[in-house]
Length: 455
Image (cartoon, rainbow, N blue to C red; front, side, top):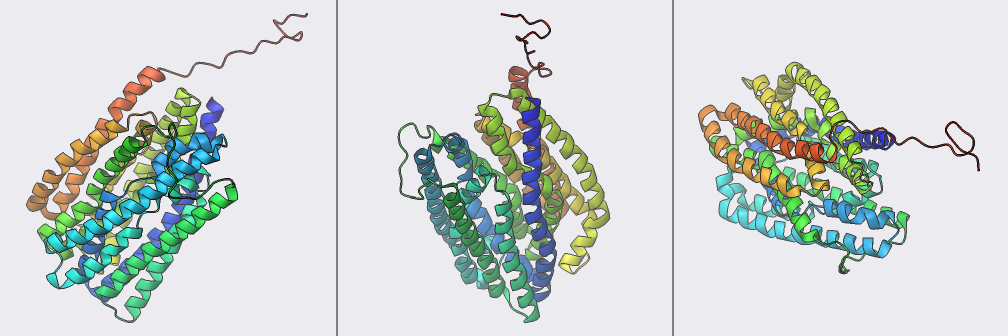
């Protein structure tokens, strides 16, 4: 059992390494393309770019179903045991979920711009460009292919998908800086980034299915009785949890833009990006955790799950200490370089952003564990409580203390979320894996060994 949990940890860290490589490349390039965009547009117009793209991502997150989670939850067992027809039907459900929710997101985003666009903080003259950009939502979600990569333990393909989008955005931003392009051009670059990632991920997903063999890619195939009982409830619960978590990432930026204006929204968005970018390596463990927790769950290795969770907490704790040191030394320097202006109190702002991100790291092992053991409703309940607390809190604290207040509200909300998720995990460990793991049963020698008998 200890060996199995040790192997799970090796796979988790190994697969996380592939995800980190892709995101690290994106983080490094983001220092370039954001700096180029700010210099080409100016801080205020760059703030409009961030508000429009943040609104698109927020609507995408609010409407898209996280199909990779039901693909792993219901598809791992038939895929592992060679029931290709059943797996193909589960896959078809997930593909349909992606495409249908993408279409819904496009419609909701377009309607949202038409009704509430100027309330988000961008000028009325940019309404048309913002509405055209909302078509990007239709191809922002490619969860089914990400699920295939994770199911096949081919996490390095996620790195290729990230790299394809990063290259488009970096090259496009550089050209825009050289030729003094405007907002419409940069919205096109951000849109082409998403389209490139969508096409790359789809092509690699189809190639991976062809390599496995025996799997029919038919998005219209219907689930048979007994294929995936409760799949809609599971999908809506996990997707609802993801929707609520996006409140911190996107709607906070939009609220700051509405209260303080595009320039402050740009500073808030970039400082949050720096804080989250510093903490991103540990956050990328989440996709790698799901398949390993599912394998241990199917073997009923509860102490193995407990051992993996505790090791991850120790790793994240040490990593968080390092992150704080990096933020103290480099945070304000990065903010000044990316925005091309010195922002008073930048170091304090980034420390608050990083504090919120570090509390989010504590939830990294908890959320997938609760999902895998069938308590995803607890995660959703926690998100609802935190969201109802966060929205009025960030509004009030932003009006009182401006950007620092908005960042501090994220820290308070992160602490509440961590406390709520930790409680059921500790209760579950107390019931299923109390104390230390029992020693493995001793083997009895039957061929003349010590304590054995001869026939």
